Length: 629
Ligand code: NHX
Ligand code: ZN
Image 1: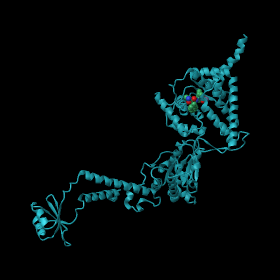
Image 2 (image 1 turned 90 degrees about the vertical axis):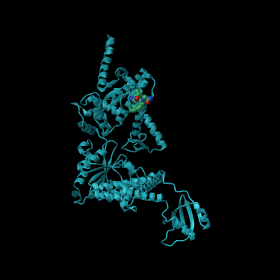
Image 3 (image 1 turned 60 degrees about the vertical axis):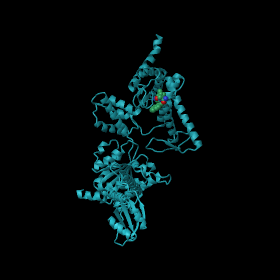
Image 4 (image 1 turned 45 degrees about the horizontal axis):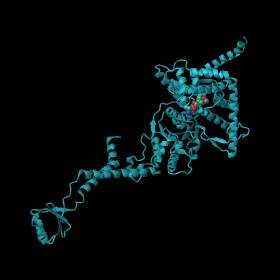
């Protein structure tokens, strides 16, 4: 923009208009109605008018007379003023001439206060206008831009126009190689990159160019990263906006922002527009609810209109991200809108290892690091969790003053991310420490005897997540299916902590609450979703609400069925408890041995545990022989 343009823009700016308007108003205020055509005359001329009976009335202000004549011609002044030469005889003369007269105190000089008062009231008025216009502009969902509106130049106010803060445009350097463990999602997105690079290739065969795709998956799986990588690979700008940013402030600003987003995107096309948490605006329009719902619907309607409106050949591709696809409005998923759905799932074991490798590339790692060990111990972890583990490991290494990340750093960081940091200062009585040790060994021993996933670590050092101790299991292979036996075994391990407490101390504690919650959840799933109870049969009495979120269930069961479900759950958990108790009774000496060792050392690794159990076995076999001697 050159200087001349800039100046013209400045002149056209409504702010200049407003300031000028204010100045004029102020001036008018100051002069205050004395703009009648008046003429100053000599005192002698006034006396002459008085003698000739032409004066109707006189107002005396200090030494000035304001004279209103009885009549005046078109070109004659309506008011005369004059300075009094000698005031003494004036009253008598006025009375003699039968003229109306009065006195007036002189007008106060205009004070600073007056100016401030009128200026601030003007400012207030200006703000009022600004506010009204901004609401008006925002509510207006039709009309392409501010210029075509009735307010003309008011477009320059920037009402409802998004600034850089509302959405973020970047030229990203992210590439697909920065995204690990999402091979299928990448494959779907590679096509979008190609479309952005060579749209002609697609249009020449008559293929419709997709306008949008929906990235669906749990939090932390890298949906934003994938979208960025698409922009990076295609070498085009990346517009980032969060769906929740559209649904705040005044009613209607959301729609205005959507409009503006697409205007800006059109200027930079080809480009990627990424709308995170699109469920915030894309919720089903059910017509229920008040106020805010209207706002959301308008925003959604505007988004739909924009997506229908732009020319796909221009090369704007809208990527939306959500972890609640079920609640999206069907209109959003129609062809020509977000018609593609790209699942971005939690990584499997191999994916986790790949993600760890990507993050490890950016850190100085000691030689011979086993990342698979971390991957094994973190089922269900997202990409973000894994990145966090590696970062915590790097931080720990710096804290210790070392120059590379070791396996020990990684193991500690894994524990930290899963259970929080150690609460070493927490004071626990020796009796309670004993209960905690037996509880944990209960879990570990039953897990060991089952021969399933090996025990990785047992600890009785309390953690900041509230756990007084924990037993960590890590399988070296991951299963896509879980058999009924797998789940029953899991139940047994979970209730074994409580079983050990009962067995050793003939009482129980509140500490098992978390174990019980988890066991109950597994038992419920077995009965109401997996068809693993003969009494209930193959019925889906529960459905998962948000499959990509915490796995909470919605029950479809009748009251009678619910009672049966609970009876079945109780049976499963009780059976598991009996099983665990049997294992612990049969291995009571091992339980004692391990628990005492744990009390002394506070931590036991999986290998140590196996070794301790082996040693215990040998001495147990030797004991009868010793006795015979
Ligand atoms: C309390 N905490 O809440 C005390 C401080 C029975 C030896 N009054 O089962 O620590 O009772 O095998 C993640 C995982 C809270 C978060 C477990 C938050 C457990 C844990 C309750 C061991 N290990 N219980 C266990 C335990 C407790 C709790 C958690 C959590 C205890 C038990 C916590
Ligand atoms: Zn427990």
